[in-house]
Image 1: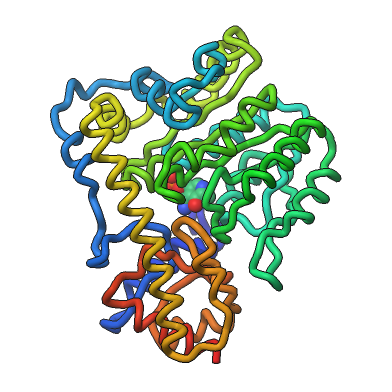
Image 2: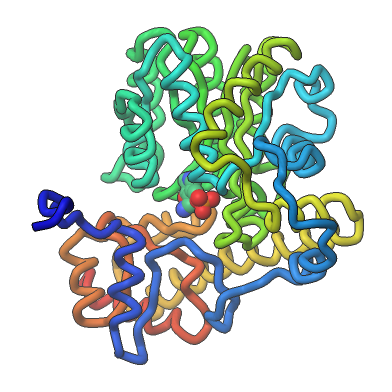
Length: 396
Ligand code: PMP
């Protein structure tokens, strides 16, 4: 007998489990469009030049403060809210380093579960799968709001307004800042204005997930538009910020969590409780990723280099979307694939069914999630034609 006899086998994670299946596949033609990790056109893992240059020269190996090194945290704030942000000037943002976007989401949701009057959180349908796990594990009560119209491969804007309008006062609303995952479809500026107005008048609490700043359009300020507009409009909000994609620092687990407060005194109180929440979880954050991000953002030449590399990554993904749609047309596909080029960011929501996704895997060794989401970052000039052929064959 064992103390663990009653522990049942759990299912593999739908996204990370796919990577294991991909690794076990011995076919040389295999293509991984599962996990959202940027690859260069050679299909290899990609380390940014700016990151290589910033990675060395270590001041020390001692503990960082619970909420991360102040230099890093300040840079993270500036990137998200803008250098000229009045909320930053008024010192009313409580911020902490986090274990990438996931850790930031978890710290925020634990905090909200502990201190907010309502436990209801409205999450777009669909959303990144891990959102649901995080919020449930924090003890929040997960509700959904419409986001996507599958029949048109487009935003269901009316559905968003209708569902958020019906949400009770004080409910939390999860908003993707840009490059919505998995659909790749964001509201326009005009639509954001209406959503923000609704959130404000209905007194909902906005919780923003920003995993792709700069990765969507290549422009950091443009991708932060919704967050900054919200910050100007509502009294409070929370933000989970990831540097996994835009700095290519996936495995470093570097990000930040921010709480916009009424004033500096409130921000001090909030930060004290954030630290009390983090201390029994992991005490202090890791220092290497924070060091890299801080170094890049403190040095104008490195910042410039990083921004140009970010733009190159965003451009490559937009170009490869175009290539994929061109190849499909060249193969004679009569299906409308135009949504793929209209979408933005790392994901293409192809509109393929689970049965088609299963065939892609079994017959063509092309791996993507069951909902028909393809990580565009796995495409390159060597495999795009092959993937187009596979898409065409299963959708004929
Ligand atoms: N939010 C969204 C919408 C994401 O797509 C991801 C990564 N796939 C994350 C958060 C968090 O990623 P990480 O923990 O690697 O920063």
